[in-house]
Image 1 (spheres, helix red, strand yellow):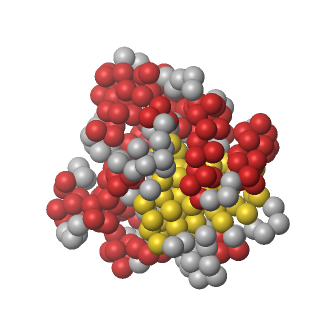
Image 2 (cartoon, one colour):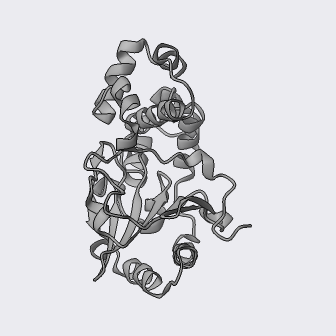
Amino acid sequence: MITTNDKQFNMFPSHVGLRKYILYYNIVFPENDTFMAQYTLIPNACGTLTLAFDGTAVIAELWGASLTPVLLGMEPNSYHVLLLIQLSPYGLYQITRQSQAEFADKRLSLADIDYELFYSLHQAFVMSKTATDLANVCEEVLYRRMEKHVISDALLLASTVISDSHGQVQVKEVARQSGYSERQLNRLFLAQIGMNIKDFARLTRFNYVLKHIQTSPCFFAALSQQAGYFDQAHFDKDFKAISGVSPQAYLKTMSDFYYDGTEIYDTISSKGD
């Protein structure tokens, strides 16, 4: 387990079988000033399950894969505790087995989508005495739900090709390696991730860029070339189209944005194994 500070915990799934589908659990105990008015979630092609306790009720939501920035603002400051279950791009389909195109860029009541899952996670939230207990009980619920593999092997292969190339691959090459036509593969991506191949690759490349901005001194001309952009003007335009701000503005206001930094969770377990 990582403890970022006294008010936040990040944990990695302990079940090896879940690590393809769940990136990590983030548990936050917000204070009045934890989240600022400008706080924005950066699109990352991943879905999220959220549970929050506001002092009266447990609020459970399903957030579909994000293609555009989401202004969260100070909303979470009103919660006593907030659990974010950050899923992989195809994790939400593995849980719900419903078309992800219906969920993309939406915040929905989990009870309306899947009451059985809502009830199980709600009970976990109510019964758990510690943050670690909460993550572990939720994990058992999700493990039972995701034990049977339902993700298309072709989609897994295609998403790996895109991730390994940091989004710098042509759609036709992804289709060739998967053994599917572009049309067939796009249907799979829309159903199981919530966006087409091109958008998924674009967000993969964008998040590759964010990782470098976040972790090392930044020279945008070199970074744009490294990320496979035609030139820095193309890089600047695409960055702003996805994030809503220029790379230069992002660098100055990074604290206003949520960056998940999933690469740091590779050796962390909620049970310490």
